[in-house]
Image 1 (cartoon, rainbow, N blue to C red):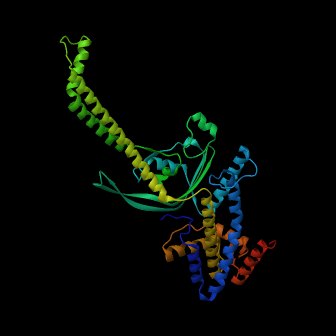
Image 2: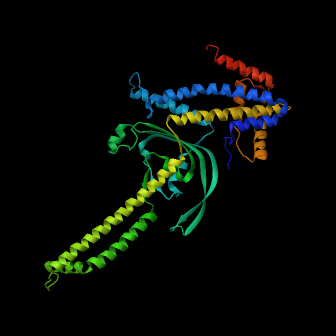
Image 3: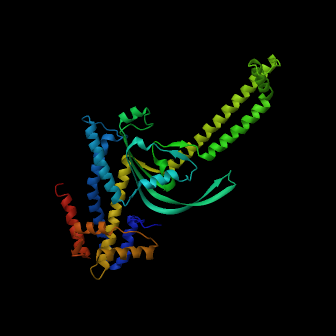
Length: 410
């Protein structure tokens, strides 16, 4: 797995690991400290959650409450802008990374693992941002030629993908002559997915359309061509020859008169009916194959979708809160255990090395975020570029005092 900021262990497990690292003598005191730190962090994130809820409410498609006053387009745009800013903040805190435009273009160009080709109208969007967390290399066996041929491919997989998409306004779609299906103009879409191959990122777009791959067109086209030729030869061969001869006689290109009996016309009509039925059958095959592709897409999205709209940022705020606590706990624990003050670089290296050696986990620890939080909470002493932890009793007192400050007006 490539280096990532995300710590792939539960907060509960990190607390237990830190407790074991410090030893039995400080076990009880450390658990009290960890509980206080979690409570203070939870309260701090409450304000961000409220801001997200208030800014999202004017365009929440799942809202079941009434508004007191109508909202103008200018106000709506202001709310959307504020929400996008807060949303980016919470994603960064949850250790998500931005998926670049190049990654999205690569997804469109690479072969889908699900044998589905999708087309996306990027012009429909006023804003598109994709985020990912947890990147790994996986192997999948692809089957072709009715399962007779197998091919193993390695691909990049994203454990979590969050998307933020805002459609253009109604005027754009009116000029285009095609309104979005399932979504309103100027609406905002927020979704969270799991286990998404990089090559299939395009399936997460709300306006993606299933397109036939060249191999599918070749299979259907070849079947139609061969089958059509067989029908023409076996059912209409004699009648077509007579009809061509008759047209040639009428056009003066043939001197010998041609006679077509009623039986010939009946045979020709029956043949054309058979040919028409064949064309309809091939068209139905095309439609059925497209429906199967759409079902494959829907089935994949059903199992990959984790949350939608307001539920997404509730989930992400919880994830950001967990990451914040884990980072602060680890940094404080290692400083507390150390016999001397450390620089940020020394502390960062020690924690990353510990994860690599003890837990076979390679990560890019967010040392700056962790130390900034500890400094704000006065849980570490800083002298120039050196950091040292205050003792556990003093740390608990300071957290307890901050917790009391939050409720002094209660």
